[in-house]
Length: 476
Image 1 (cartoon, rainbow, N blue to C red):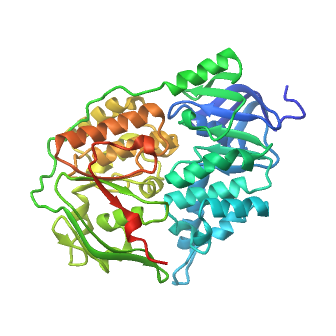
Image 2 (image 1 turned 90 degrees about the vertical axis):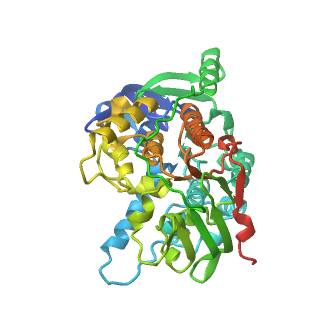
Image 3 (image 1 turned 90 degrees about the horizontal axis):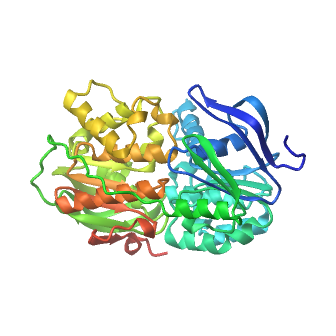
């Protein structure tokens, strides 16, 4: 029986979220002012449970009560907004360039508390992005905008799924200092893979595994404290990285050279006068605040940024704009990024998504060889994902998708690996696994690596070169 006061409630409820995945039966009640922490490894069902909170899925048995008003931050919500923008662009038949929805409009889609909003815009340094198109924002800027949207809202319930992923160190520190006061006495449901970095005290705990609720407990009792301590101790074991025997060999150096490069939108420079070269088997950490152009820099290398043709960019001996095919370059590069993850929205299988890394395509459009299929099977076994081999990639949790895309980037053992926030959404065990893979590649000295991460816990000590994008920010 769900109480009349409950913000959210499940009573022996089974929620069908897709034809192949259901939650429950589960009984769960959230009372006004509760602060819930939802824990579990990648694929445990945390994001699915939080989407059920918002009314997603069909309640096929039992009872469900959903919040009358809530504000949401999640990768699923973020991707849905991006899908809307893509549909808007594709649906325009005028032939004119569609700028897309302004960031400020996204912010004001729900009612806001003006004082809280001003505090968030200032604290997260968002003032300069409000007039930009939403889709042009970096991953970190997008997440900060959605955080401000939720925390400044007048909604009495906040549903936050990995809300801080992608934030730079300064923004994360500010959020940790101010989150509790911004939340106030509102109800919170927070899912995270990093319980060691909670932004506020919580009083209730849910632990999930294999799509089911394993434990519901108050944090201040002995059983709840034990569960929380257990999750904080999660760590990965060393796993050997599979090496592709048919990898492309490259003898030239530097692999990449950029000369006096500037990226600008609407006449406003993001970074300018950048000179940089990546030598064979060199390992680079790219640092800088959200919006400094780190992702744009990597897109210049892959050829996915339109301004690569108006700048002096040379990649694997090919000068951009000299008649080279984009595939001439991509064959030597493995990439992980948020835009790659958004692009993989078709319902292809996990195995086919992994195999597409051999062909640098979004989706697999030719038959993979037997040796490629065997190599993909080894990767799935090393990642503990063999049981998901034929599962639709789009139905995986965000963290499980990320893990598959990391394997996809490494599957052909490329000469150059571009990793843009690779550990976003990964739990402690899988973060340790990915960092171990990268450290093995560094030791082998056969792959050049460019690594972007804002999270200090994901830094890799053996990466010995740093490109600080702050030195190329335009003088204002």
